[in-house]
Image (cartoon, rainbow, N blue to C red; front, side, top):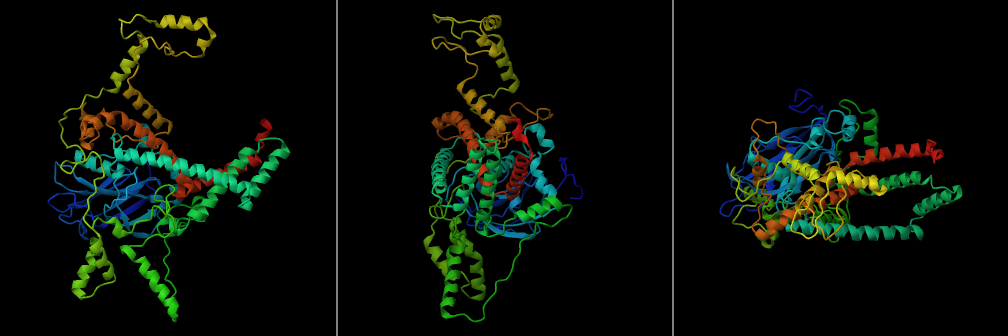
Length: 608
């Protein structure tokens, strides 16, 4: 990229991300009579990249001369990298979706090459442990300006402000559009009802309810019984100070100080290598130096430091057996297992939800050792994983679980790609809906003239009734009829009200958790009225094998999206306080510290 402005983006580039797909291991057999023809999609911000297709392998390896690497320009540090694996079925046919992974760019250290194995997942809102294969990636991040990278969280993209805080990506055809949607959203596409997604959301809400109830109860008991003396002392001093001053004006300052204390405590607890897949997380001191002193090509955020372990020359027999036992435990299952608690989803822990190894994430665990088989035939040796290979070949079976309640193997997961639309009603345009609402506001009457009781009021009668009583002067809007025996024409149907409430929740959350899959430019000369229906049909939004599920999905799908908005707000708060996004948590801590200084130094208390 020779210019700081890239194509249609007006924002300056603050860095670049090098991505490379090396191999996949243990992918599921998505075709009935042939192996998987793997193809990889990368999506980062407003750009996407598709790799070459590797035909006929459930564990494909991309050669060095193939189309497997790309460079993404980074405009904002909160951008994410989405990687999806598909079974390419040719032109004009929908590709089978194998799985996806999501990588937060802010977690990566600059000028460091990450060679990582990640398990593929189908859903983003449902926790499912069925194996979908392992992807092998190589990543490298470079920041042009560390200060701009940190401050990029404080502004929205210039071009996307007109679209309601939405980052758009231009797709070449319907097939590419569908693959990009699945790579970003997963199989639980917004607007499509799935019973497994509903179960996942319900169980997640129950988890938060139980955990937070117990956590608040235990925290209050710890404070009262002085389990943590320092925390109890801080609460006691703050309480006594408010009692001594006979005022509550110091409560905001103490509240902000308590939030900062929680952030720092969680930083010391979650800022360890165990909670960051073994990699060293970015520290507060590095981000502070990058914010204050950072500039063009600054390097205050260090790269990953790799040091060689010190080996002792002489070991006792007991120590030697201990080291051998630790190494065998690390290699158990064909991958490194995290022994401590993890944050795969909020409040996950090792006791009930253990971290999976690489072999457990593969549909066929023996695929992880195919390279060792080649070395064994060449060198006639068992290799370092010989015993594990024999054991895993006996244990693992070819099992394809049926994850969805409405998917069948004989049919595709989503609708066929075809410009013709069958069995779908015409979706009215926004202008037509607004016209009907405006007409209803002007003409308010009774829907059924056969009723014994008739209520018909014109706008002038309503205004006159408002002037008769001071109660009706409080609002200028039309008040709904309260007599239940009178039938009044409804402004919206039940389905329209659910959709309206869903859009209202997205507007209240500033569309940070937007579920819109596409935005069609009506000013485009190639625009057609049925374009929305064609794209919905390509995604399979309204496709269900069961007609009862299809009818129920028209009402349940918007409700699920409303649940996702609430859960997304909770997840965002949880990730903020557990330093899952180090840049955002640092900016929140920095802003809270500045607010605390203002509350203490500025004499705002005299105004109350």
